[in-house]
Length: 621
Image (cartoon, rainbow, N blue to C red; front, side):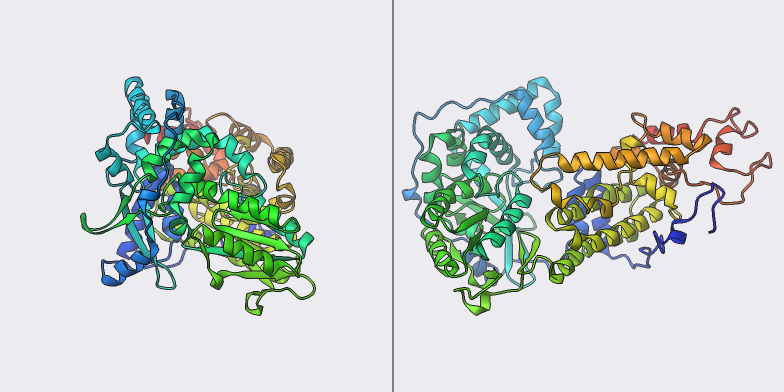
């Protein structure tokens, strides 16, 4: 096998990576590409890397301009309700108070980074610096406390409720309205939800999984119910957020003292009509009144929707003890014996209709294992996508494997954007490190290893290819092994998903188990690598585990030029920096170790390359 001067074989020689520059294709940059690249750079700097990745992978949507068609379509999406029927919360609602430290923590870590501003132009990035001043933080806390207790002037309340509408075209040419909520409304909603989160978990347990990031548990419950009951139906509510009765929501919230911390905030944001406006070039060209349901884009929306529907779902559970229900916001899955599934689904649709939500029969899908099922034949499928996961009548079905592979390969849009658009290398790294890996983690945790191994191997190959582009050269087997370790263990955090795929699914529902198994695997790999390294390589490997040594990989505020960053990566991964065969001025081979130690180079004795690169990064802060 061909080897480098450092003694390790090239990855390509061992079938780890066939072509490290496979993603570097000629691409004629458009104005849209340049805009996206610039916007993504900014989003990465403010640690909104997920939004940057979403921007890069979003399909090109045709711009929506104001038209009679738009007005008519959105008229249908915003049904109206008589505001005179809205109930009022009890006058004796308890006083809500906030600690300024909790407010600062919420703004720093909970408010969405890089989000579009509301009509007042406030954003998280404008609010966050104010929390560093004690007096200003106290003022922010006082404002949020007043909002939580309903002490807001009518004019200000109107502005808090008003929404700037962005309208996108769906693939089916229909319109999708997205509202940009005021950051102050987002902030008070987050604080209010925190106050009732323990009660929400108790109220929604084993039924409503849409609050609290429990989608993986919901998927597993649907799978288990399907195996036990024999048939399952996925029901989708048409325009559910806008269609549900707001009177029903307010009655459910105000009628239970458990939700008293939400009373005044709910009245402030939903207690009267809200204005939803469509703007062109900064001018309001049309507006709709929101009097029904919860406005899309509301942080409080999922919680209020779930509170408004939970009593109906619990009643269905009581009425059909042989059936099982799983809700994820407006998506309701019904599992029942095949002979009674139709009856249960009909009752479910009728109960949701009483709240104002019509079942979208075009999206109804049914799976069943054995025997006839009392559902229309056009609903029956061999495979269905449930909350982003694949479920089939046969749990070993190749249809699930194909689905997982397709979903994994969707990340290729991101990989190509990383290497084809004009990004700085530290931005390329940020997108790869922060955004790419979580996209496949969900698949590994929601599907058995038999369905994920091939997709994980494909994904690992693409990650290695992009890493090679960032470090300007082929990735050796040893370098890839190092890169797979966590940063704190001297690596880069690009763990091999094929290894994780073997145990991720089995860890679902067992808190902390996957973290423990992953850490054990990483510790073993670190020990094995350490044993194979000798002399200078071992010293560099150990030094890379020191606190701060991996900061260029984890801190988005650390910037360096492309050459400096790729050199840093190559040094960290123990890959030769200078071309093979290049000699030092002293005549010796210019290996990494020799360049660090040769006394005949300038600045005798030579400052180590690590120190030079660290200085470059420090100057770039």
